[in-house]
Amino acid sequence: MSRLAYSINPFFERGPVAIGLSWSWRSAFRSEADMQGGGVSDFTVADAGYLDAQASFDIGSGGELVIAASNLTDTTDLAYEHDTRRLLQLGRVGPSVTASLRWSL
Image (cartoon, rainbow, N blue to C red; front, side, top):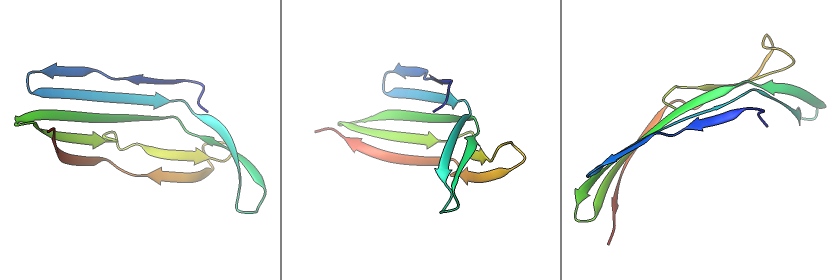
């Protein structure tokens, strides 16, 4: 578990429009795992920050258009064995954007 973590979530709403941002960051942390039967190894998961955004627009008659974007910073998750020169794992999802329509009856 990270020793330090924070999140900043500004939000703006006026009339039919609502916009929100979310910046989250966590510090590096140590962990351990059984390395596929090769014994338990300790490693460090690197610090990481993520920026997400969401906007919604009231389109009338109970309808709402929602656009959401995740990982706008294109953050790569990294893990190291003992020090940063020994990369153990690299995970990358990349940014994504979704759009949806919602209706309230």
